[in-house]
Length: 188
Image (cartoon, rainbow, N blue to C red; front, side, top):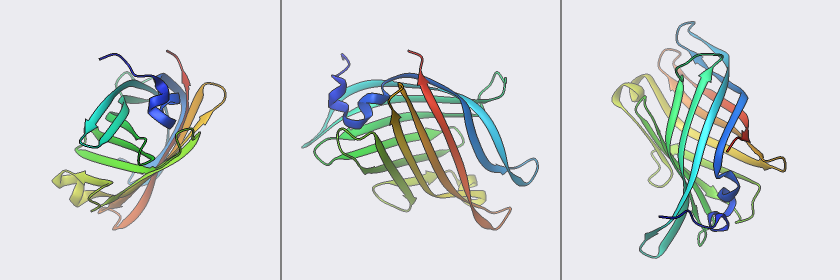
C-alpha cells in the first residue's frame, strides 16, 4: 500500500520519519538501588505512515511505530516499544497504541485539531476505551494505573514529548510517577 498524503494524518503528519534524540531523561524506580533515580538515554523512533484503515463508518490514518532507547553507549536497548499512532479526523482524536516487551499494552487517546502542533493523550487502568493491561507479575508488583503524554512539534524539524506513567510499586507500597522526556530530530 503506498503511503498516504501526510495531510491525511492530521497532527501526526509532522511526525512521519526517522528520529533520534540524545538527551532523554527517565526518572523512575531503580530496582538495583531500591530508589528513584535518573537515567540519561538516547533513542531512535521510526514512524511510517499508512492508511486508510476502515472500521465501518470510521476511517483512520496512522503511523507504524518502532522505538528503542539506550543508556549511554550500551549496545542493547533498555527499553523498546512497538505499535501505532492513529488519527481519526471525524472525531478529532489522536491515539497511541503500543506494547512493551515486559508484558504491558496501552491505548492512549485525546482530542486534537488537524493542524495542532501540541496535543496530549491519556490512558487509565480499567478504562474500556483508552486503557492499560499488564501481565500477572506486573499487575501484582508494578501496576501501571495511568499514563499521560504531551507531544510538541517544533519549527526546527524536531518534536518533543513529556510523559508520565503512574505506577503502583508493591516494594514501596505507594504510587510513584515514572517520567520520560526527550527532543527528537529528523535523521531520515
